[in-house]
Amino acid sequence: MEHLHQTSTVCLPWIALLLLSLAMHAIGKDAPDEGGNAVLGVSFTKIAHNGSELPDGAALGNGPTDWACTRHNASGLIFEVKVNSPGALRHAANTYTWRNTDAGSNGGNAGTAGGGACSGSTCDTQSYVAAVNGAGLCGGNTWRLPTHAELQRIVGFAAAGSGAPVVDAAFFPNLVAGLYWARANVAAIPTHAWAVGLDDGNAGPRAKSQPYRVVLVR
Image (tube, rainbow, N blue to C red; front, side, top):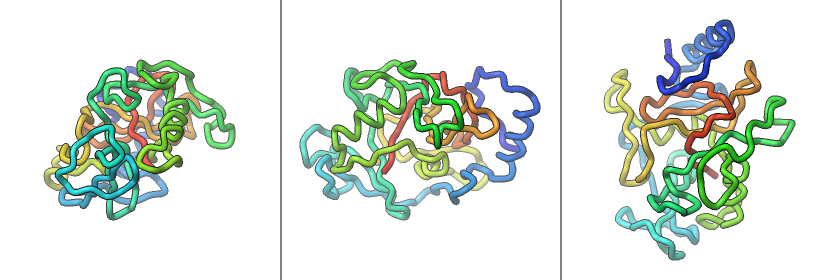
């Protein structure tokens, strides 16, 4: 049975927790509507601020032809690349509470506005998505939170069943072992949304009021 991420401090009602644990056991580390984790050897391509493809040796920077995003080639998904620059919009240490004011997709609970610690936005996921889209990162303005299965595609495993995650630092520098928000709320518990721990690759429910990191996709 999958276990919930150990860093959680949230106490869920035991019945809901049992049901969620059983569901996670059934689907493994995948979202209900998507398949497969990334594995070692998966192919990535670096993408520049202007949307052009770059060689593997390209460096992060602020210029139009500098590296800023990474494409997961098998799926075509493009992920933002975090920077180690305090005060920057995409600083790796920035945190955000989960926020979605769309009543059709938030499960009846919009989450918490401005509860994280960040720069360049009001520090919730909805405002961060808006800021990145406004910046036109890597030539796109359709950035969003990933599903938990999409986020898991950047986590590989050293050996089958080892439970040892590997995030390829050559294509995803500055990611840390910790929780990253996914886009879906938890249907059984409207105050919670899904998050993925990049130190174990597992998805689990977390209170929308908690400040976690974010990496966007389009």
